[in-house]
Image (cartoon, rainbow, N blue to C red):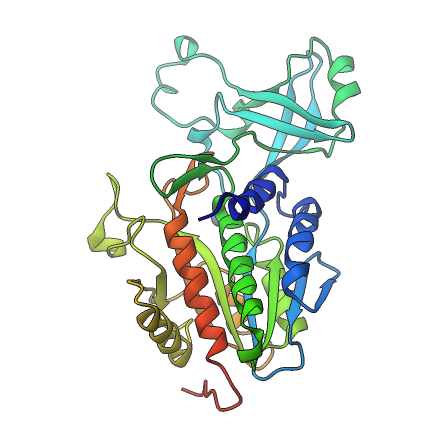
Length: 354
Ligand SMILES: [Zn+2]
């Protein structure tokens, strides 16, 4: 994939967006997607909704969530150490020693998450993950006053990790969950826009907020957009590294192509149309059977209003919710291709009644 395209992903990663504080990254996304769409709006929850051919039929929503995990500054002690609440689902074992950035009015401040050293752990603490209350952020301040002058209560922070190439098509960063999903959908919008003379559907791209804390932006934006169909793009865990079980979660691997979910949350026609789009493009895909919920925005979009015909396409991702999530740009490119073909094949005759 060209560097000029990847630069957009890098700009999104550089823009912090803990759930509830997404507008910095939404601004970056607006600036990019406005070239490929006819209308842009932001709803009261902060969801960004960009429409291409908004009067077309059927109405189809493509969505990914722009929020990421983060920290919220809660208390500064007498020595200038900063205590925080977590936003989203952290494994506390991944936190000690992590570099973070606290975002202030005058720019980001570097800090590290502190824990007492291994030498001082009691025998019952060794080998166990720390409790969140045993962790703090150290910005190198020597007093409460010095820290308070730099950091306000209620400031947000994220891990400091940024996008870096790993090997081949692989990249590593924090927050590829789900900024790589937003990147994929915007790339699909760009490809649909290039062929807009073939487009009959009304396409609504939603960059959704607050997924990590309860699928909230998808819930409200699906009501607002009122689509017949919707496809969400998120990341999913893989079974291609140690300590995972193919027997339990099936065979999902990096560089294995789009992961297409089947199950009760998925409309069977949408599922079939996604497979057809992949087959026509000659793209190999991976099937992800989910018997009940998918844990993604798909679950709430499906039951919006009188029901939406939903699909879910996922990007294989190793080490979810750490500062070093790994995805493949090849998988992303293929998913953008599948989504654009899927949308361009829709017309008034498209049937989604099972
Ligand atoms: Zn997540």
